[in-house]
Each structure stands twice: as C-alpha cells, then as structure tokens.
Image (cartoon, rainbow, N blue to C red; front, side):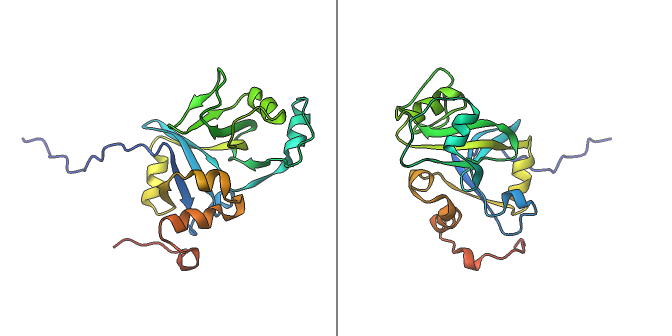
Length: 195
C-alpha cells in the first residue's frame, strides 16, 4: 500500500518584525477597534506588538508619581498610550535607537524598545531618546494566531514609518497607515471575502 501524498502546502515563515498591523473594520474585539500596532517580535512561536494609537487613562506625571520617579514639570507632557491588554502593569517605551541602557532591545536599525524605569527617569529629566512612545501593556499572539488573523482579513500589514510613529497625532495614525497603503478608510467595508 502506498503512503498518501501530503497535499497541504507548507508556507515558509515570514517575520513581520518592524511592520505595522492595521485593524480592519470587521475586527470583533473592541480593544483593537481602529488599532495600529507596531510588531516588535514575530517568530514561529508567536508575536508581540504595541498599539500606537490609543490613549491610556493616565498622564505621564501620574505614571511617574505612581513609580515614585522624581521629575521636572515638563511643559509638553508626552501622551501615555495603551499598548495592549497583556502585561498592562508593565511600561514599554518604543524609541529611536541612539538611546541605550543595559535593558534596551534593538528591534530594527532605527528603533529600540526599553521596558525599565531608567528610560522614564531619563525622559522625565530631558535626557531620554530624541523620539519615543510610552505605552502601558502590549498585544500578544500565540504561535500561528497572528498569521490566521491576517488570513481572515482582520489585519492589514504596512511598512513602519517614523513619520507615523513619532510625528503623526496618535488619533490620526489609523487613517495615516491606511493612506500609506493607498486606501481611504471611508471605502473600507466591514465585510470580508476572497476572490
């Protein structure tokens, strides 16, 4: 008896490190409605990213006081963003790569991630990186989960952009990423289909 031929196509793994995910209108999780996520880790074991366009219910001064970090009274306080529902009590700072401390993790040639209080103290005293986003929590996916969600038209992927990350108001980032793909949000449908 012959062994049956395996006809299942094996798709090689392609990492989405350093790319944006943009939520489609048909997403069924209110926590990610109109979300833009920067993927900082994607391996065959799973993925992790940071929502870059949802404001947290906490000011930077409140965060520093909660962590008992001395600080200047900054004229222009950075916005604290809601990075995702996982590890919400942990802070993450996505920043330009010229800033490094021992715990800094390089995620792309231009970007790094630091999740210790050192960077918050340096930002509080105007000694931090030139560009940064401060987030509480992150978004995580198990092995294969993100790939399945992309195949189900829940997310689009787009190239990372410093302009969108650091110079576009957070409330305009969803439209900005879609525009970078040549898509106007007014024409997106909440339904999905395959040709």
